[in-house]
Image: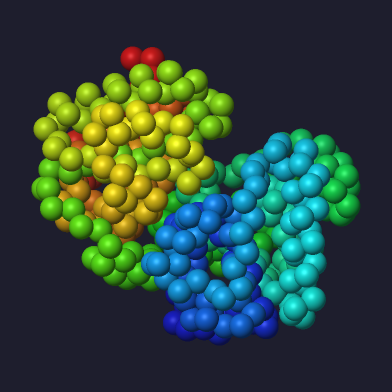
Length: 357
């Protein structure tokens, strides 16, 4: 589906941007950039101020921007009465500032999203989803629905969770994707809107302005929050990264630029620096770094970057891809198969590194 004029897409007098990473907000900005200048456009930033400051240097963020620096996973938030109370107070205050809001989000599932939706009184038809990676390829059932309902009651609102999560949730019709529409799950009522041209235009401009990489043999190393999520111990994780690092050096790469997952803290920073990783663009979206012509190798933990890069026409300069398989990764076989098929089509050498090999 193609829309020529995005300015008129938001029909409500107010717009809420649920921002949990720089990348997510840039997706939304690529489509609704003009909305960011309006009085009743509000950014609720779930993250730290440092990342928000970087975002404000890249684009003009809404004048009304609020920082909610909490852990928003269902388990963490369900037990954090103080954080939920403070969030509800913020949302109730915003609710009285405007008669009706639309909500742009990259993660329309979970307790944090439910709190935003309920206490801002967002109607289903006013939820606008933006893609959040490869999980949207699959129809995923929600677990522990009754328990989640009881948690909602505990926090003072009635909401029985839907049977499916993310794009599989049939309640929400609008899906803006910078992945190829065929790569995400769909239902007859879904309006799948391909925004890749908008994202490509924005990312290209940001990259040319901010990313300065001169070494022609440079790699982009994307990390993930394996230690923070409890999936790997710090020692095991660092041994795993070292194994991948050895593979990179064997390919003759001279410079390795680090791109950290938004949920990763600084627990491994000293280790990364000991390997000589360059921290210049650590918090920039990885796709923006790949736009630089001197990046010829991508190291990724089976995430959506390769699919997005392909849809943004970024793989033509890539010579090597190293896919590393973290512990307890979901749908490993399916993801590796699809990545290998894509890279075979592009004639890009593909190396796989597993923890146990």
